[in-house]
Image (tube, rainbow, N blue to C red):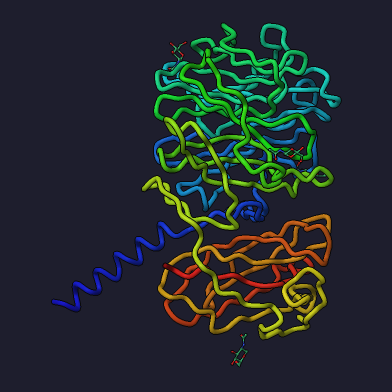
Length: 455
Ligand SMILES: *[C@@H]1O[C@H](CO)[C@@H](O)[C@H](O)[C@H]1NC(C)=O
Ligand SMILES: *[C@@H]1O[C@H](CO)[C@@H](O)[C@H](O)[C@H]1NC(C)=O
Ligand SMILES: *[C@@H]1O[C@H](CO)[C@@H](O)[C@H](O)[C@H]1NC(C)=O
Ligand SMILES: *[C@@H]1O[C@H](CO)[C@@H](O)[C@H](O)[C@H]1NC(C)=O
């Protein structure tokens, strides 16, 4: 009887651990399932349908100009599945070659039963400055493009959407000659009907949410692809009065080298800043900086954002906490075979990494005795330098299981590691982790592997 209860408890603990200990790694390469590459969903927004989050963002595989708006789904905001491209380049016109189609945001209209996608539509020199609208019957279906226009003849570049609980929806839009506006949308969301508020300050990539009856708007200065200290303002009503703009990050932090894209409120305790860390010279390697916001002061109107290398999110409970302590395993201490060998790497741990993984000789690095204090899934961080212009790929397997495909974005140079995340299912005690190629040229060089310990 006792044994039975203990077994049941252990099982419950494991299930709890598996579903609630996954971490977000700001700025990491994020390989989406059935996509096999770094998730291409830049400048994106989230829409929740039932218990699933859909991230709709820009595919920058080939750089600035429009190719696809992609849709990815997740139930926990950590593990992502590719759902498909919802809008793709056509032969000509608005969505043709050399066009700018950015900042996709989706809202749902209950009455018309349509998903409505708003976009920034522009020419190759950003000289048209329009907003575009497309609709679909399903959240990640193929969207039909309707039209693009300038709201009340105002320029409209970076934009965001905000939907009220009662269904009324608003467009926030940057207008260089004037500043920034909040426009009310028509009932079917296919047009603007009123200007609700105008700032004399240009606010790029505006993102808004409501918490305890107060509105918070976030945005960025205009500094091109380079980052700045982003800021926010609050108001009891959309028409104002809006507070002075204030930074929500330390002075000079440049928002931890990111730009606001979307704010996702899950609960009062879990409001997530979603920013883009753009890499102008190779936009496909831009990453996602997602961090929890902290509220304080009178009516919680003061917002601050700290950086976390990794942090644990629990979407079901609506809570977050700091990442667990990690055990560190250096590549140079792994058992290397089939030509894999230790290399110099100036900015790696001990100035060493392991190279020649994959390739024609199928080099491998095997880490044995990787400790886990309890069984369950958790996200490891793998540090890897990649001096190429394109991604590299590895198969990462634990305890002899099928390898999981992991992408590694280019880093600044072959001497500077960056981080990629991979979720593996640990058993209690000692585990064996193998990093190998995938048959597509060289795999990543491996600086070190960081394994979170359950707390
Ligand atoms: C990128 O460009 C290549 C070569 O032109 C093309 O085959 C591919 O479909 C493009 N992919 C995306 C996602 O833009
Ligand atoms: C959707 O569109 C209908 C019809 O135009 C409108 O009455 C309604 O308010 C809109 N919003 C929602 C959330 O249903
Ligand atoms: C913030 O940084 C800027 C430039 O880095 C500096 O000019 C300014 O004085 C700083 N402000 C505060 C409050 O530290
Ligand atoms: C390397 O292999 C040996 C023998 O199998 C083993 O004892 C050792 O723990 C391994 N080291 C690593 C880092 O995997």
